[in-house]
Amino acid sequence: MNLSVQLAPKNKHGLLLANPVMTASGTFGWGTEYEHLFDIQRLGAIVGKGTTLEPREGNPQPRLAETPCGVLNSIGLQNIGLKAVIRDKAPIWAGWRVPVMVNIVGETVKDYAQLAGELDGVAGIGGIEVNIGCPNIKAGGAEFGTKPESAAEVTAAVKAATSLPLLVKLTPNTGDIAGVAKAVTGAGADAISLINTPRGMVIDIAQRKPLLGNIFGGLSGPAIKPIALYMVYAVAGAVDVPVVGCGGITSASDALEFIMAGASAIQVGTANFTNPRAPLDVLEGIEQFMEKEGIEDIAELIGAARR
Ligand SMILES: Cc1cc2nc3c(=O)[nH]c(=O)nc-3n(C[C@H](O)[C@H](O)[C@H](O)COP(=O)(O)O)c2cc1C
Image (cartoon, rainbow, N blue to C red; front, side):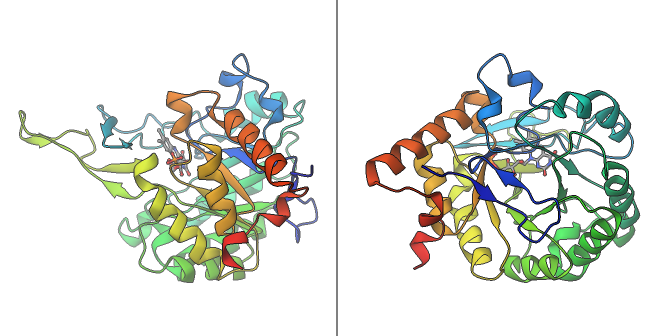
């Protein structure tokens, strides 16, 4: 059976995954944390925690709240910063078979370009995932990814700064997901991943105040799966680059829904918190499905529900 997928067919380095199962940024550490639990080299790719130019402490506690079928988080991009990623993490990844991507986050377009430029040519970095679901400080805090113009501006700046394969990760907090997808593709995205977390909040009625220290957070887990699936379907029909589906995937059947909607690969996120082997279970379930259905190449399933 062939499960391999090429996520950056137009990029000179390419981004060939042995299979379509990836981990979602912020939910799988740097990969090293999971090494003792299962053979992480079997995964298609690993995406690291959102990385900023300088280390960040993140938002005030509490930063996590359970919701029906989901989790609200307002981590606020706590991370070790770009220098430490390049110095301490990349050399480990350079010895791995599984490609690792760095998820980058900036407050300005210049930040994004600098992050991408400094990662260019670093051994152990398989590609960059550009998180455009964060506030544009210069434009009064609206997320870069809410508008096609600002999303394209970030993508073009990153593209000019690196030759690494680029996944641009879309936020669902926009009224025009297909328009944003087309704009970032036109600006040089090799592939598109979606979705990041829709905004939500919880109120503690005993305290009569918002439960999260940051007031609102991002919702993830099975609660968002139908939204994510719809958006993947819409985007896969609008662009001609590979699409990576993410949002509420906990099982192989969830993953297969995204693949049939048009995703070439999928990311497992919140499911890692309840089942650390979730990505491997998803992979093995996809293999079993293919065997049972007599499918020899995963390509036969990509977009199967669109035909
Ligand atoms: C605790 C936590 C931290 C996250 N951190 C990031 C991040 O740093 N960068 C990013 O692009 N997405 C981040 N995400 C979003 C996930 O990568 C994913 O897009 C989202 O959770 C939806 O997938 P899921 O329902 O499978 O978790 C985070 C999600 C969670 C739950």
